[in-house]
Length: 243
Image (cartoon, rainbow, N blue to C red; front, side, top):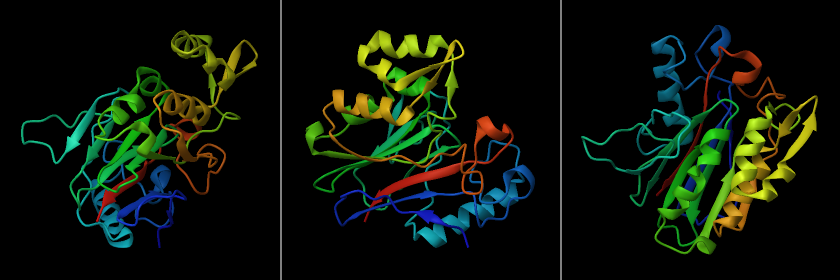
């Protein structure tokens, strides 16, 4: 049976959310076993079986809308019109039963809800999208003050495993000098803390109720897929919806 992570956040009673792990699915080889990504060269039938199993074990009201993620900052509102592109890195909804989801394998998934339980959102924050403002743009889509928004950060690559070049640090520090606190020098490069960078961005946007983090996709190989560790690998999903 696939295992699910239940976010530990003070969400309203009508908000449901989960983050998946890599265990308990049908995929084989490097995608073993609960791969939800259809774009990583896994057997399409295995992916479909995994997605159906996700709906069953998580009690989803509908299949999630699977975005085409491109490490950008576009946010789409769900349900989307028939002509609207699903190429985006975040989605939001006010409609009960509409599941928001993002897929990751080292990048940071962040879910959101309003304290009154009227809106939820999910964002995929790799360093590029994070630097480009995907979290701030997701927050901007809420119809309440940022102080009334809750955020939870899911599994991602930790600072101990995430080495980046000086250009990455420069990109963040150009926007906010305080971002320098999230980079630790090592051998002419830097170890980056995605959770701290995301928390800083959310706090600057007015969201102070931020929880989660701490689960490293790179180091916890039995629990999570990691693109940096394995290159050819599967994807986890982080989901949120209203009932």
